[in-house]
Image 1 (cartoon, rainbow, N blue to C red):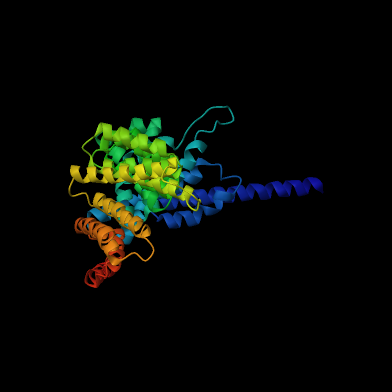
Image 2: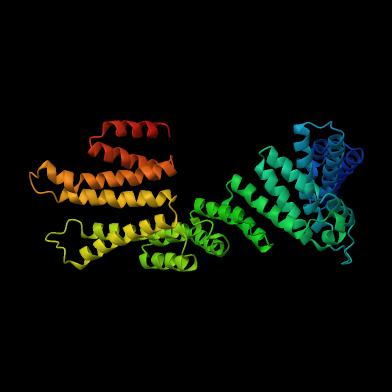
Length: 432
């Protein structure tokens, strides 16, 4: 009885295997009949999980081939102007799905047989199909991007960039169907942008690095890489990209040196920050923004020291820390003034000079004797407030959206009892 039962079980297994093989054959007939990818997948899906068929290259080659057949038919419709936006997305998705199925089929098509020999049955056709659609993956990426399907765009550009890494596909690509190296580097950059859109920040940075390794070094590469690294809170990457950008674009854009110095100041590395900006100034002594940054560094250190001595009793003008604070205050002013000399249109430098002058007015106000007459304020405080207002007004004239300067002006005019100007500034703030 046991032998009969075992024999029956073997028959059942054979019947099951035969059924799944039949499913694969049925799906292949549907594929050759130009059935839709969805129809072919519906037929062949049971074979994906069956032990007898899920390790067969044919199981994945068939839906992959169907996907490319579908894409080809849709491409013809597009050329005839008969394909709508939904159809274009379907076409692009077919290219993605076809590649994914073929990637599963390739290794299974190279498994040795019982005699240890490898006899690929589908690989040659898959290589030719992929090589023939190589350029189409860029078109698919662009279509995905236009539809704001950034994951699809990222995947399509990834396939395009990875495909030539397969020696067989690279050999099958005719020269006229290959991209120039400069174009490939731009596509790698675009891939990084797509990854950023879907907040795959590490993937975006890796794509930008790939673009750079391929020769892409436009300014926007560094700007976007720094933005992505900042969003990822990856300070090391921010510094690395900023340092690389400075030799090429530092003279036209001071944001790179700012990134470096901000990181150094946040880390409490005042001396490093000062050394960095001094090196930049030595390289480009006529750069107004570098002088402004130097002023910011001096002021940062000054505020740091002020906080350190705040609340101490019996602090005198002879204390070394007080002397350093006074010197830093003077150095800050000198740096902002130098920035204005180098560029009279530097609004940030005017704002900085306004800040320093307003501090002078606050110090003079705090030093007023008890029950000081109005004449004291008229002689010692009011002139400084007016000078600070002039600086901030210049800053706003150069940059009408400078909220910090507008806010400072509102406070200064309030202290000057100048309601007319205070109301004017309030209206400007409301319009921001």
